Image (cartoon, rainbow over all chains, first blue to last red; front, side):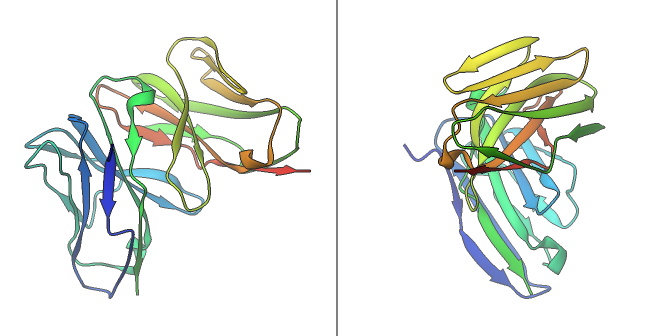
Length: 114
Length: 110
């Protein structure tokens, strides 16, 4: 059972570079989302999707782009990386309207922007 | 908007009981979650409360009072491996968007 798979696990970027964090789930979940976690801030929602072709902004969407062309994949794009985007990124998925024990997190992606 | 508060750090002794509190102010409340997160790892699900009362699951229990905007996580018979951060999160609205507190770092000492 793969669950929620994120790649890469670690990445170092230079300021101004672009990159894509990949997220895939094999549980046929309608809902997928991206969070970032910073010291003293807790996890904050970046973008989310309730189904293929549908995306929406979360709390901190600036500097990030998402798309949902398939149910399985929800990539997060950094358009022009900035040091403020140094963080740990988590992808999550669930069935919509589900209870808490069906929200699954990926293992995280550690991103450093220098 | 939402405002979720929990203590930053707590220390407890192995074998003891510890209670981690969480207060929240949010519109469109649709449930409260507790997650455990060890350093360098993803959050893992502990409990979910949507109705008032106590939910018990082994050594872990979680309580919710919607009228008071209050929840707690109770950990019994503490073990060293329980040293971790404990995250309180509220789900808001129809989508499964979680809004997290800053987390409580629990240190269990011998």
